[in-house]
Amino acid sequence: MISKIATTTALRAGARTFTTRATSGARTPSRFPLAFGAAAAVGAASLYMLPSVQLEGTPTMAGELSTTSERSFIMIKPDGVSRQLVGKIIDRFESRGYKLVAIKSVVPSADLTRQHYADLANKPFFGELLKYLTCGTPVIAMVWEGKDVIRQGRNMVGATNPAAALPGTIRGDYAVTIGRNMIHASDSFESATKEIGLWFNKQELAQYMSSGWAMTMEDN
Ligand code: IDP
Ligand code: MG
Image (tube, rainbow, N blue to C red; front, side, top):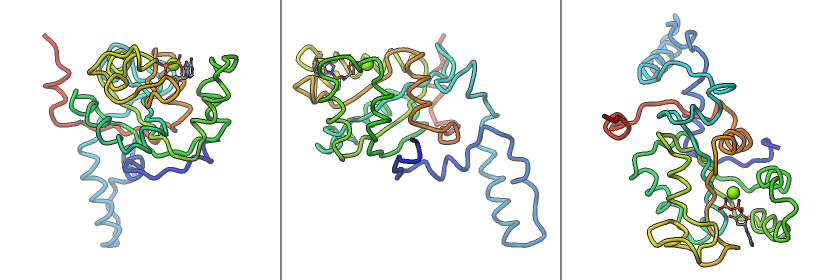
């Protein structure tokens, strides 16, 4: 299923750089200058890496609830991509202080969409929802990290029906109908764990320290 996902993005190289396993081999200088240069560059990059963290069990793919490692799955739906609102949405999460740890453009298969919305399979609108997500226009699948990001992500996205969404929320500012409500956000730690695992491999989740992280996430 994941093999059907067409990835384009930004963090593919990062996914190779940041790993959940020790990279001791990358730090060993080679006798060959070219290989040595590459190894030195990887070694230097690793100075900026955090220690390995476990991404399965507890904490899960969604990090650890109520800590700065908490993660949410946020997806800009086809209407948001088609209407060229991707930058505005990303800006909101970045400006709030959350950290983008994975992002990719995906044309979802029906199978992936069914799994993502498994809890809605019996709803009368499910067929239309499936058509909407699999219309051929990509979605932007993202993982955002930071304290309380799951609850705050829902707050930032707003009510499911944009007609009821407050101004200042994403749906309240950019959407009109429930059938084209632009964006998805995980609604619980369990959903975030399931959804991140569905859309991403753990190797795709970057670990890095963003500048300003402590100033944003520390509390008194
Ligand atoms: P959420 O996206 O706010 O979590 P859910 O109830 O989980 O809302 O529904 C998932 C998605 O299904 C919604 O975002 C919307 O795209 C679609 N949806 C929900 N309710 C309706 C409806 O009554 N008519 C049409 N589409 C709906
Ligand atoms: Mg939902």
